[in-house]
Amino acid sequence: MSARLVVACALALAAAASTPAAAQEPTTVRGAWFGGGLGTASARVNCDICTTDRNGGLSGYLTGGMRLVPGLHAGAELGGWFDNTDGVSQRLVLYGASLWWHPQLDRRWFLKGGLGLMRYHAGTDAPNDEPLNASTAALQLGGGYDFRAAPKLWFTPFANLIVTSSGNLTSGNTVVTDASFSMLQLGAGLAWR
Amino acid sequence: MSRTAFFLPLFAAAATAACSSESSVNPADATPSRAFGIWKPGTHESCTQEQHDAYAAVGPDGKLYPTWHPPTGSGGCSFGHEHGRDPHGSKLYGDAGGLPFGVANEALAISDPANPRDEDHVGHKVEWENGIDLQFSGAGSAIFTGKCDVLTKLHQGTHSKDAFTNNLHELVYHIKCSDGTEMHVTMLTAIGTPGEFVRSCDRSVHVTAGTPTPANSPDGGGFRAIPDRTCIEQYLLVPPGQQSNYFSALHETWETSNSLRRADGHTLAFFNPYFQVRLPSRFHDPALAPVVGRPIDVCYEVTPSGEQASGGACEESTAGGQVAGMTFDDPNSAFNGAGHFVDINANRLSNGDGPEVWYTDAFGRNGQTAPFAGSIRQRLSKLDNEIGVDAGGPVIGNNRNYAGPGVHAPN
Image 1 (cartoon, helix red, strand yellow):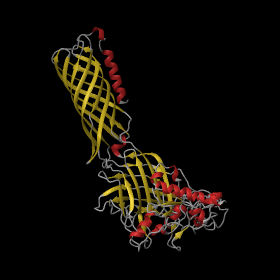
Image 2: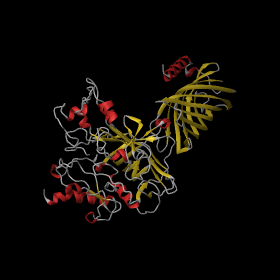
Image 3: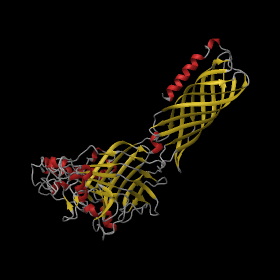
Image 4: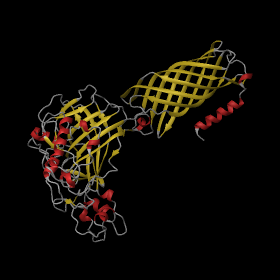
């Protein structure tokens, strides 16, 4: 079974187990929280000689933080995207800090924004192949919806768009300049708070 | 044929050459180069030398050179040889200055008159393709892409003993890619070691073949893989009931490795296309004089143990053995070297500081910004395109065969 199918099944089961939105309590609880999620993502490397194709792959995140004020959470986040096609493995890893904002305290939907550092790596198993690497500043925008799955457990479908600034894509001592990255994530997570 | 029709190709070709090479020289007044006018019709050719020499281009030095022409001339006459793909369809034809043949040979004769390298006419082979996809190696294959137009010409004679010893051959190479890579190069490429070649069916074997021309030919990278009698005995002459392996027996690969270098040794450009030929009309045979074996002769050979050529080009050429005594230069022989193609490989530039025009010697060395005696004008884009992963091109021309009407060895 493919990784994407596993993710899809897990999301479907989690959604089925969660409480319907209309019967749930506001999500803006107090204190610390942490969570993680899985999904799929479409990523693209942009540069003068880069293909315009987007590349699908497995995506996920781990996060944790504190409530700042009612309706506003802050947290640190580690997100990633992984793909292995035709012997080339690629990954994008985001080290970020984000804010989750529930504009209406009695509603479950939220918006998310954050900043961070995105690292890209592409390589093969061949010993003579130099990998490609890059590190760039990243901006994340997204949103989602909280379903209460248990008293302190929340199930959250989400969508995120992460774009980066331009940076150098290096391989050994050589460089492709003005390379940037974009990633569109779709998935679902669980949060304990 | 009317006089107008006769001279029309000359004026058309010359006018095109004059315009594209930005030359102000009137072709009618141009001094013939060493390469011009050396082809003479043989017994199998119905075109005249005048018809042939009507296909001419004025080179960057203002001299008159032969250039590409079709295998047949006006009125359907035959030149008996081919020069590969008609370059007029290439997007880079305008950069090729009419594609003169022999400019690098001419330059060497000026810079080193005691050691010239002259090549026959029929060996000039043109290949081109527009819009080829670059192929990146390793991790780059996942994300990098690019398209190029390429037009190239190598003197690759596969009918005589010339390439057994001689590693210097004129190469013209034009490439323009979507990443800004651009090269317009003419040079004498040194392919492998002078005086020897490598056995095509076992490249670990270096066959010493004699003294090269010129005697001071420099060593080059790459190699010339040429079949010899061993390959014939191993793959063409087979026991009864078996099929000959023509690809292994008669397949030439000339793997070039070319650099343009500044006077201080810095490599401005590197490119290494491989030029391949199916069914050449020669192989190396030291038991024969002048060390040239003819595949068509092998078609009639039966060894004491009953081995002989079977199927393929021998059967096609001799109508299954019904045509006896066919000679190597018979237009019906399939061993004519007209199946040639090119592997486009790496194209690296280290010319970020420019300029775009360099003048080098005939071997692509001693690059300077001003012309000097025996120099060749080269054009490179102002670019460093080293990205850490190798990028190459595909094979071009593999699906083509240039054996037109009347084409035969020597070709």
